[in-house]
Image: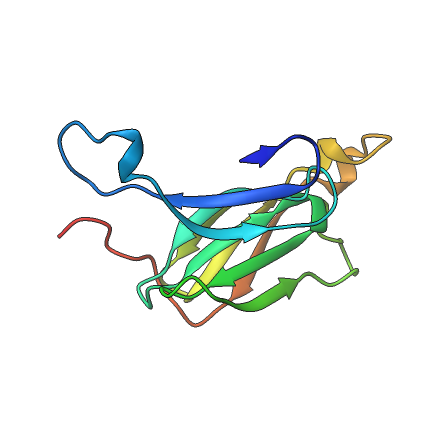
Length: 131
């Protein structure tokens, strides 16, 4: 999670794959602004080029286009199990969905019944990072 100064600002940066990158190679890709602790957590790249970002503090998944524009926010249902600070996501290519884990330990008081993995249809598969 990348946040700064407790103001709830979270940033996604890009860094090219190359030998010996330097700080100047970092480029700001997207900025989230909101409540403290609501910034980006786990990420997964889709074959579509979209970036899927777990927003633990909001209990949502953000979908960012390759151009750095948020195109969608996904929110889980409240039944039978609510999303409770989703932290990690990964693709299930067979079902074209995301597997989303609850990071329920951020809920106070901690409720072990909130731990779970959700299968969220997004009609996308895992992106090929290196070809």
